[in-house]
Amino acid sequence: MFDRRQFIGSLAGTAALTVSSRLVGAAESVTRDPVSDLTTRLNPKIDKSREVALGLLKPSAAELERGLKLHAESIVFDAYGFGPRAAIDGAEFAAQAEAGASVEELKDLREEMTMTRFVTDPVEQQEFRDAWRASGVTCVFNNAGEEGQDPLRLIKRLARHTYATDLMRGFVSKAAVPSDVTTAKQEGRHCYYFTGNGVPLAQQWLSVEDELRYVRIFHQLGIRMMHLTYQRRNMIGDGCGEKSNAGLSDFGHSAIAEMNRVGVIPDCAHSGWQTSLEAAQSSSRPVVASHSTCETLYSHFRSKPDNVIKAIVDSGGYIGMCCIPRYLGGDGNINALLDHIDYVIKKFGPDAVAIGTDVSYTSQASVAEQAKVPKRSRQREEFRMLWPKDNFKTTAAMNESVAWTNWPLYTVGLVQRGHSDEVIRKVIGGNVMRVLEQSMESR
Image (cartoon, rainbow, N blue to C red; front, side, top):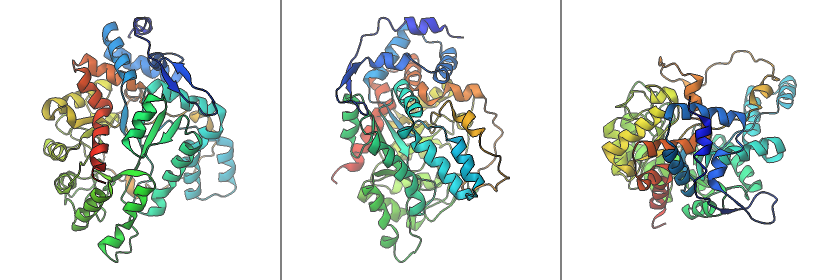
């Protein structure tokens, strides 16, 4: 196991960096050391994940110091993920279940609690802040839409995250343009860019233009990226979970053209390979696979083969590497994540890759609060979750090594792999910023 004393001791020579940070309810600015933020006052959960990852990486003191300093100085942009999640209020949840709340009501209540409870609960808010601080992440392209096409379904998560950022805007705010991310970094704050897990469709099919009118509306509400499909086939194209590989529909080409016009990034992370390829070829703006992996290293239906990655890169986009062990394959840990990043850099160049974790930090109280909830009868599997089976066995250590709060160690790992500071800055945030700017050009 990596010696934690070496981890802490190696920070002694790190130059202090100070930034101004406006906290919720604070009238004045305070100064802090961002490198220290990454490494001190870690709660037991964050500390355990760090120990697992450090035991795998085993960086030298110099590698650790350089990586942490670079991470603290840089704009760090999670290409797709989730902000820290609160625990549910188990007693209140149980009371609602016993009062006869429907399955849908309970699902909404769970999401509302995990996505907003840190706004009003002081203990949950402190842990929310601690997770952000330890991660060193400036901005998350945050999942703000439940998977599907129905506008009312898509708007629920968007409302919850808007509520949270409205009330905690001194700590975490909604970013509407790339300069908002830069400003947040300069002021020591954090922010979300919003992505929706589907193109909103009224399903009335009066005309192509009428059917696509909600793309502009959701853009006005703050959505800047949309999934073309989610696992299953829809009117845009085949999802990655389908056995067929039919590609983009005629309507799908029109949907991408409208996204290009409005300024919404097409995301093919959950699309089939042919759909992804044709989306990248059809688009006049960058297309991304925001949270995926490389099929050459590990063939999984959520991965992308080289010809698809090349088409995405040729569009001006990138492939974001996720932190899901069963998609990474191999050892399924932080080293597997770095292997996928290395592969893309060497094969397609440093502009071609980002990190879209697709994971979140969850409150330490989550298990205890969930234990208060009565057991439910077995539910049918949701249609959107009918994924092809695989035999990969995920371990707790794998998940801990790629925990969201281990973001600083992703940077340290890239230092270990011999990449320059310029390349690393592109991977951990610069490429996402570039695509955001290109998607808004001439608007």
